[in-house]
Amino acid sequence: MNKVLAEIIAGVIPHKMTRNRWRGILRYGIFNAIRLKREISRNHTIPKFQLAICAIAKNEGPYFKEWIEWHLAHGVDQFFIYDNESTDDTKDILEPYIKQGIVNYKPWPGYRMQLAAYDDCLKQHRFDARWIAFIDLDEFIVPVQDATIPDFLKRFEAFPAVEINWLVYGSGGNKEKSDEDVMKRFRFHSLPDHYLNRHVKSIVNPRRVFTMIGCHEVARINGKAADSHGNIIKNNFRERTPQQDVIRINHYAVRSLEEFREKQLRGRASGTKTSVPMDYFNQYDLNDIEEKQ
Image (cartoon, rainbow, N blue to C red; front, side, top):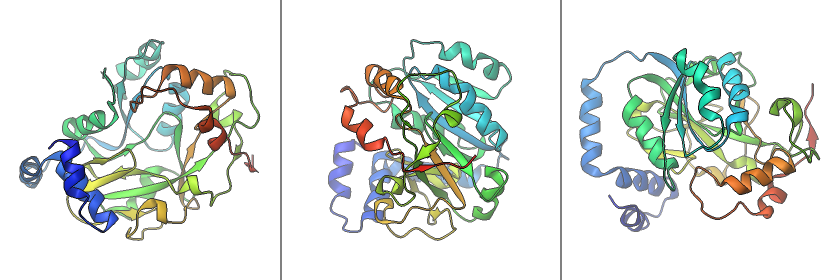
């Protein structure tokens, strides 16, 4: 269904969580949803991967190695990477991982292609992975109470999705770009209860969801999503208190000032044609607490 028409129809539903779910279902298409439910009921394929990550990127080459190695060390065993017209060395950096079968690389040109990439990932890999996390290259999933992300997910077998909160990291006063790893360079983060940390990213059971709703939430086929404490989610993430004590997503939204200016020049794979404003840097450059070594 046309996105605008889906928004109009879903807009009459008063409850925000229900409205968002139907927004996703309508965008996916009612008949497509019926066919998908039938396909899922008939397909009993055992997933090849326990946990995959789906991401779309544009000129993020220098950041891939650290990002991939971190997540491999914490239980991710496959990456579905959509390349939105990168002109840097992204493909060359990913080549060793592609040859090892760790990265599934797909050129993904065009404007406003993030949701289309997520839809394609679910369509192509719905039966390939037990869980798929939808995150960006400036986000690192950090298990706090468990050794790995799959260890954390063992407690969520009954849920179609888990929503994990951000912890926003600032520039720490760094002006210039460096070859040092992002997680070593940027040690200052926001107050845990800062309103920006209410944002979430989702790890989903792809056989129990239709599609993503934006880049944060998911349209579920059945069941309710859970927060990181295992509670059923009843309110939109903007209305909830951030949780970072069990698991969190370190969000390095600005990095250094030089890197942020590079981000302004390249634009975002999510699709905006306008430059990322300097107000964004000021909003996300949060350095209230120094992370313990």
